[in-house]
Image 1 (tube, helix red, strand yellow):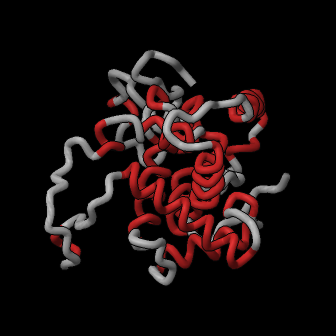
Image 2 (cartoon, one colour; image 1 turned 45 degrees about the vertical axis):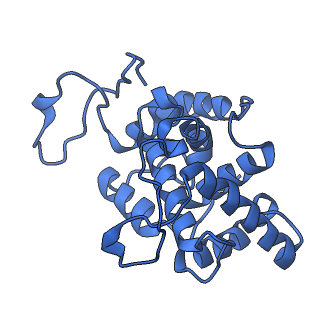
Image 3 (cartoon, helix red, strand yellow; image 1 turned 180 degrees about the vertical axis):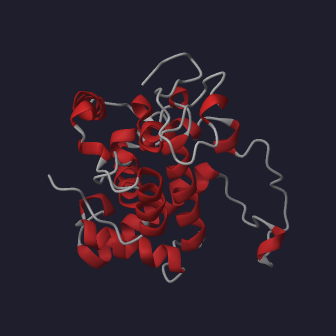
Length: 236
């Protein structure tokens, strides 16, 4: 299957990653093939979501892959286990909004006032996914996860631009929630469920939780010679 193209994350994924890796197609270097094959096998192992329903999990997996797609520079959200990361985060104080100030009144205001909705991350996903799938059923006769990549990009673009409203959830707010969590899942320590086999860190040449890597700082773009390490001591 050829690498998928996404219209959404080019400045973030394409330019940013390309700038870090130069012109080398890192993903397909011979020395990386065994690691890439192992990562692909891991991505196909079944996972039972704890918060999302199977249908909701399919949405998150499909949408996050469009935001952070696999390409010649490295693995995408699906291979990195981003959906699993987000599912796990929903069962934390963050996902439940336990540490948030959630008392009213809830009024729209300037952006500098911060988040002004009565929804926790759990609520945003539950309501947002249901409304997004209802919209795509009406427009295309299919849920979001069953749309073509181009159709999925069109829906995500409408959400990002604010032209698609998901009931009580503004489309732009839902999009930012999904995009933020997708990036977190791609680059957080694998201890939390994403960044499988430290694929995100390996792609960037990031050392991870190594105690000391100062010998390789400020060397004018010289590649870091050692692989990343997780908090739990696992190495890529």
